[in-house]
Amino acid sequence: MTHTRFTSKLKYHSRILIAISLLCVGLLGIVGAIALHEHHESWSRFLDHLSAALIVVGLISVIEKVFAERELVARLVDLFGLRRSVYEAGVHDAYVGPENTHFEDLLLGSHQLSIVFNDGYKWCSSTAIATLLCKRFSNPKSTTDVFLLDPACSYIEELARKTRDDGVEVGLERSRISEKIQKTIALLRKLHSEAANSSELNIYTIAAFPTYTLFMGDRSAIVTLYTTTSRSRQPVPVFEVRPTGPDSFFEFFQSDLIRLKNSPETHLMPAPTASVAE
Image (cartoon, rainbow, N blue to C red; front, side, top):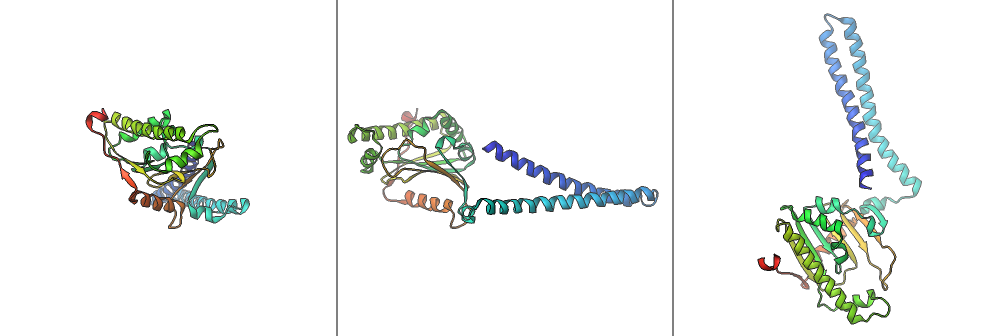
């Protein structure tokens, strides 16, 4: 998906560059025609006409490309019935299944990254994600805030009732969730320590029930929804959103994140001592 977007942008910019090059060559040709006018009038006239043609072609190419892109988008909106509200909401992409999500740009390209999830162990323990986190933690200019359920809060039991398999006691599932939260914290600190603690890592515990998983970067966010019923094996919807205005989804999630961070029930975990970090 990322490669396709890159190729499309490359083709677009290449065409614009060619058109601008034609304009420049045309302008240089006119300068040359003026210089040749006194001694080689016929060549000067030919070069003048050729330069004018190049300038016209270049201008037409630029104008056509810009307006063609706008017209194409308008036609697609009409053809597929895509509502303009989707653009205004800032929905950049939507698909099913977190395995289709590309986190590299978000994790490595964001100065500030905030992550909200229940326990996060499955995500953090992924080899690909762990590698990206190591790279991120090695960047001294990055700040990462991670919000996890407080293992001691009452919401853990409700989550256990929702996610437990048939026949598994709530108490056992609660212990599993609490253990996964502790493992996530330990893993994040280990990865951060391996990166020589180069960047800032803040881990918060929350006494709230996240209704979605959130990965919030500087200019984009990835949101994964949760089911409202018991555990489901079906893939869940994933949205990639970007800020497009005061009413965009990005602004909503950003405001929700700020309220969560400022909640009196949200607590910043103390940084580990040097001996613990090692």
